[in-house]
Amino acid sequence: MNKTGSHRGRRPGNPDTRAAILDVARRRFLEDGYHAVTLRSVAAGAGVDLALVSYYFGSKKGLFGAALALGANPAELLARVVAEGDLATLPERVVRQVLAVWDDPVTGPPLIAMLRTAIDDDSVGALVKEAVEREIVDRIAGLVPGRDAGRRAAAFTTVVAGLITTRYLLRLEPVASMTADDVVRSVSPQLRQALRGPGRAARDARPAQRS
Amino acid sequence: MNKTGSHRGRRPGNPDTRAAILDVARRRFLEDGYHAVTLRSVAAGAGVDLALVSYYFGSKKGLFGAALALGANPAELLARVVAEGDLATLPERVVRQVLAVWDDPVTGPPLIAMLRTAIDDDSVGALVKEAVEREIVDRIAGLVPGRDAGRRAAAFTTVVAGLITTRYLLRLEPVASMTADDVVRSVSPQLRQALRGPGRAARDARPAQRS
Image (cartoon, rainbow over all chains, first blue to last red; front, side, top):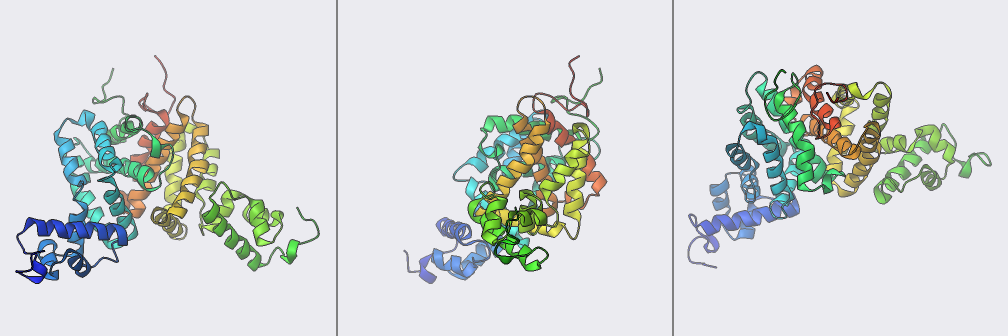
């Protein structure tokens, strides 16, 4: 390592330095859990000054979010899914995207670890709750026409949360070992019903029509 | 049953006897899994008559709930809800029962603690997963006519899991602070859709009919 500059040679402004910190942090969070990790221990592991970790990430929560966003950031992925089509096919597209990142052996485990931590630790839980409300519920609500958009978006999010909890946290059968196609087929109708709201039954993808 | 009075001297009515049974049951459930445990093996482990275990806990479900220190046993409550009406009103009745016990300041916290532990600890997680599959998914499947009953029951359970995760674990708004009536109204249509299965949209509470 370069030993000519600051402490143990890593310097601010070098993208490799930021990446090295994130790499260490990600491994520490996953192996040791949220509580056991300190900015100091991550700095030491990455061979940088503590001040540099604070400079890049501000706090442990900031470092946690950045470290786990490395693989897949649910809020950004939802934004992409929303942009790719209309409301009629949103349920299928959302389920496919959820499965793509949570089933993936690289992006899945950090997400599962993050959710476990959110459920176990109140401060991380508050962080995740706030991010989900702002980045996911509110975004879905913005797509839904009519009254009670916020409640329909919340009902939609609740079904997605149920899929994630049963398939990835409890590994409940048959949900845990169904193929992606079968999960899409099984779960999407409930998402479509959630978007419709309680006043209408989900006949199909189009708005309900009187015959 | 009772052979020579009380086996190894433990007697009904002694609080230590009940505690001893629970202690053995908790260890057996965690070490051997839900399926492998029998009332008989717990009785033998605790040095009491089988009849005494039945007397205190009624069934394996009851023993399991008591061993996990649950004031309310989801499997027994579901059995009661199922017995109280038909499939058409099952969604509303299940949501109301879930809210009644999870919102309750006495019965709720131990259930939340149990679920957190199940998510955090693999051995407890495996136990809860197995109990939910056997006592909840299979029971719902037994009520659903037609093909894919198991998958529809799993889809139903997934929606309930999503309600519990968002309202009680993540405390996601607006789900966390909605009134019971509003939750019933918001979530039941997705449960009804889950019972129908993906081939049919939930027009109403009655079975779909060909016209």
